[in-house]
Image 1 (cartoon, rainbow, N blue to C red):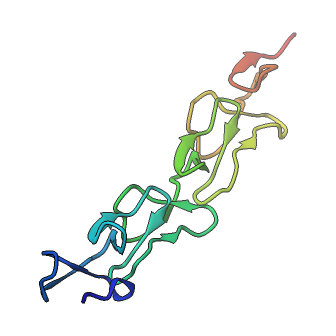
Image 2: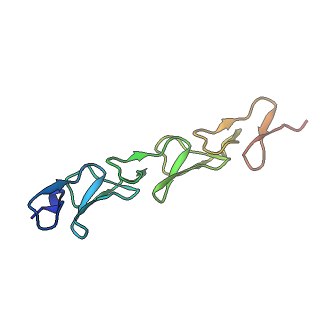
Image 3: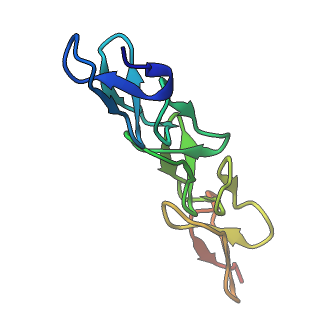
Length: 135
C-alpha cells in the first residue's frame, strides 16, 4: 500500500506501484491521487497536505512556494490587489498606506510610493492628484 503521509499514491487500484506527488501537489488519501494545492497554500512535494503561506505572502494554485505581493499591491484573501489612488504600498506591505503626509498624493492605481506635489502645487482634497496652489 502507498503511504500518502510521505506523498505517495497508488496509480492503479490494488497494484503495488506508487506515484510520488511532487511540488505544488499533495497525496490525497480520499481520492488516491496527487491533488493541486489551492491558492494561498504550497507544497514542496512528498506530503499529504499543502501548507498555508506565511503572513503577508500568497501563491497561485499548484505552488511550490509563496511570495510577498509586488510593490503597490497587498494581500486580500489569497490574492494580491492593487492599492487605490491616494494610497501606496511598498514591497511586502501588509496594507496600503494613505498618502496623507505633507505634500503627498498618489494618482495611480497600484502605487509603490506616494508622490510629492511639485512647486506651486498641492495635493487635491482626495489625495489622488495635484492642484495649483491658490494665489
